[in-house]
Image 1: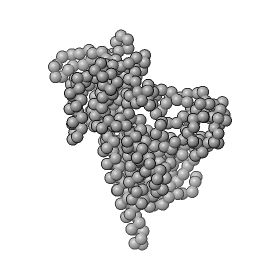
Image 2: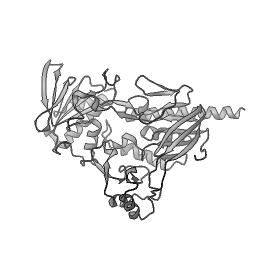
Image 3: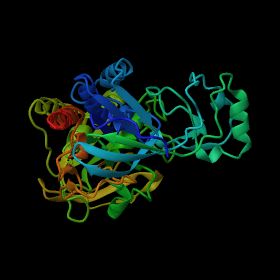
Image 4: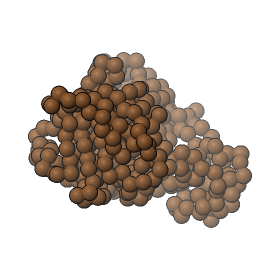
Length: 428
């Protein structure tokens, strides 16, 4: 085990998405030493995989690039990617944290030239495209990756591709001997910005996500619409690659349901309204979006966005909880249900169905300390000793704007903890 690093005046931020980056930056810019750890190969989280923000419809580069520039210029923040928290012991103001560092097999010499990727043949399902495409076993996560270094998938070790990648690198950046490491930290406060994950759509059996190729999730649709995504921004059906011009959006897919997620995931309505814009941009008047909804929940300034979508002749709304989906001819999903405003049954075919899946706290493989307080849905509140805090979508379903606000608040609470620790030690 490596020697302990950091002190009880250091703040640890777990999770490198938009919330974790914000919390780390806010604390660092107040003069605090911060360690930001992310278990994936790059910062940015799910925000980096979005096509647009609502309601301004700008690309995530608007916010992420600014944060990345702030990170690069701030010496108070130490970034550690491919790092997972394996244990936390101690108490407020004096925590000992053990991190497990996974091998990247690429060192800091990497210039992101791409020669290693060009040299290898094997492919894996692309984790940054929700499995919609494949990538080489030597890959750059995405165009906004930070650090801007390639990664070798562990499956390459011991294969001929490993030797090819190493031979192709002109900068001696490939290190096939990297091993899993363990590092121990001493920190005074911890911010858990571990984010969220989409509800498993396969659990909603009547919708056939795991059976019908042309039933996808809202996150997958976001990648289809992105010019840097698997289809180059074209809205193509997974089954046959044809253009999807008649698209159904099903709201509350797994949310507000006693059999799945009891809570409202808040962002889903706005995400769907945003995605109807993608359809109009792709096809103009020839595209059609149909939104099947229980309620449309938008508040404050977002109400104006909703009203604009309502005025769009290419978008229609059906107040109904879709009962089931069956596959019709040509792979067209056929939606069955009852329109609760007209009280008539429908069986409507669409080219593609997009499920607005709910938000769950991201807990897969994350070992939270035993004294963390969670709500009934598993979202993080704080620790019993009030030295650890949740931030962003780890605390509840939040959009990017509200996640940033939550992260700022968490950073301020963490700063208070280390201030009080320093004051208590000074009084001794």
